[in-house]
Length: 267
Image (tube, rainbow, N blue to C red; front, side, top):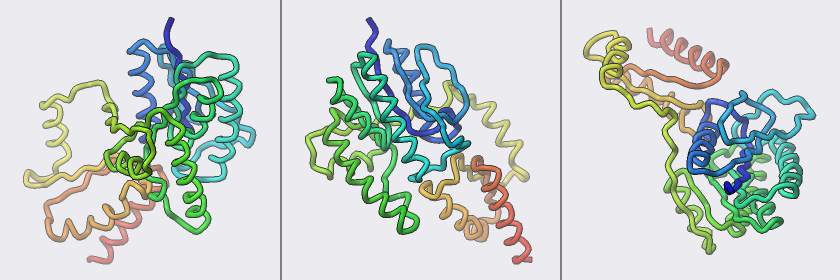
């Protein structure tokens, strides 16, 4: 009989951004190892079918279309709904492991205790990397305390970076933390010829130096520093050309306006 895992992801699934991409490849890896996975997640995002994975979405009583990265009141509402749905699932199913991501790590630890299962907490970020405004900072301080409790209640903690492992170890609990790198977001191996062809296509002149970034425009990614540094880099290295992939339509428009204004001022 296949072992069953309840994996709780309090992010939209599926969206092309960090945590959902990691979740998609995590469940794919688990199913290939022979586990059956119930994925409890938000009612937001594209439908993504993965064999061996049962995607279960909580209700959306207020009709939210999207959830921003970081703490927010809608996320708190969905966390409550996830807890309620999780209790219902645990009472009807026998899970061997309850695996909670980010703030769902605490929810997962509670559910695991309820049914006598193993608890795994997956930590994707430093809560204080989202600092912005007094209210958010207060929420983050509260969350940091809840996160520490989740670590204490879990059998293991998975971290997406070595720095996060050090944060967990600094909590001085008996729970072991492990750094598990992201699974590559593509199962395809790159081909040197195709890479060279794309490079030739992007270069306007043979001596150009291409600098690339792929990711979201969330502040915790450090993109504000990158965008601020671009004029200085180009000033010192006129042959540098930035290739940036990511961001919402609104964020892309804002950055385009910003650099258009800079070009006008520098004339």
